[in-house]
Image (cartoon, rainbow, N blue to C red):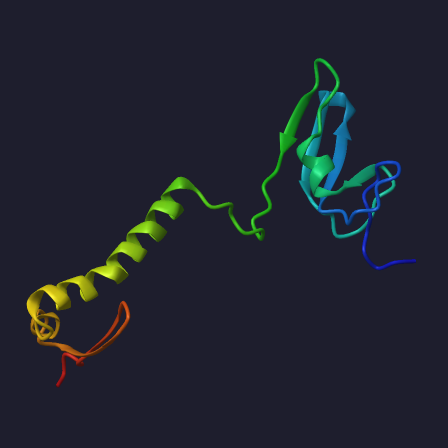
Length: 125
């Protein structure tokens, strides 16, 4: 038997990433992170089948987030990355416009620079 649990859907051999449990008393389908142990009344689903999951009419689907999984990038993440790239490009533009020596004189604590990273003097020195 393989140590990797597989999707419970017929003819799907992909690895399982989520566990589906039905709570019949509440007419609820609960989809959460992959359970530690395979349970007889739970269904392990792959990523594709867990995303496409639908419940019968009148039932509610509750999707529990996996705290250990990496968060999907948001618009803010993309904007922060774009701003970091723009900031990394600025010192070179300033140095070219100021004749080369102007970038270091902007901050007296700056000792060295490599790309967008700066080495600063300790405040104790």
